[in-house]
Amino acid sequence: MKLHELSPVAGSTHVGKRKGRGIATGNGKTGGRGHKGQKARSGGKVRVGFEGGQMPLSRRIPKRGFNNIFAKPLTAVNVAALNVFEDGTVVDAAALVEAGIINACPYGLKVLSNGTLSKKITVKASAFSESAKEKIEQAGGKAEVV
Image (tube, rainbow, N blue to C red; front, side, top):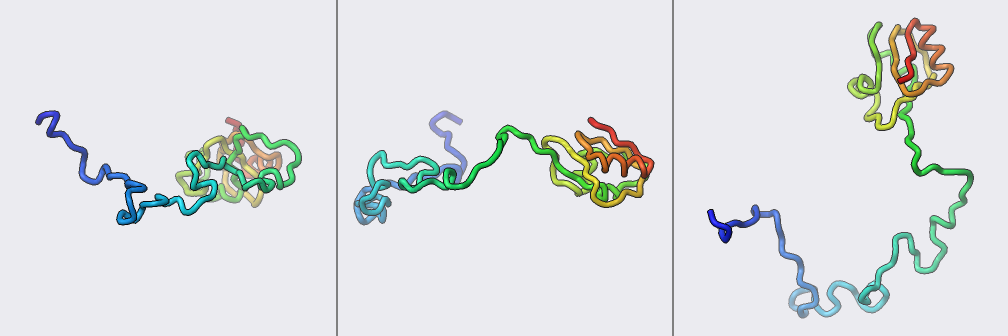
C-alpha cells in the first residue's frame, strides 16, 4: 500500500453542502438564511440567552439566597431501601448501585431515616442523618462515615 492509495473508511466522511451556488442546488440565493433580519447578515449572531432586547429569563426570575455553583450534591438513600441486603452485609455506594437501588453516586452517599430497618448491616456512607444513624444502631448494625 502506498500513501496515494489511502482513503477514509466508507461513510466516515461526507461532503458539506455548497451554499449560494444558484437556485438549482436548492440552497442558492439566500443560502438557507431566509430574507433579511439579523441572522441573514454576515456576522449576525446573537449570544446565548439574548432575547432581542426583551428582559432575559435569567434576569426576570427572582433570586434569593446563595446558590453555590460548585456544590457537589450527595445521593440520598432511605433506611427502608437497605432491607434488601442480608444480615452482616457491608453496604456502601457500590453495593447500592449493584443492587439497583441507586443509579450512580458521583459525589457521595447520605443515608436518611425514612422507613424502618430490620437487618443488622454495616453501612458506609459520606453522611447520615441523626435519626438514620439511630435506626441502624437500634437494628444492631453500624453506621460508618467514610
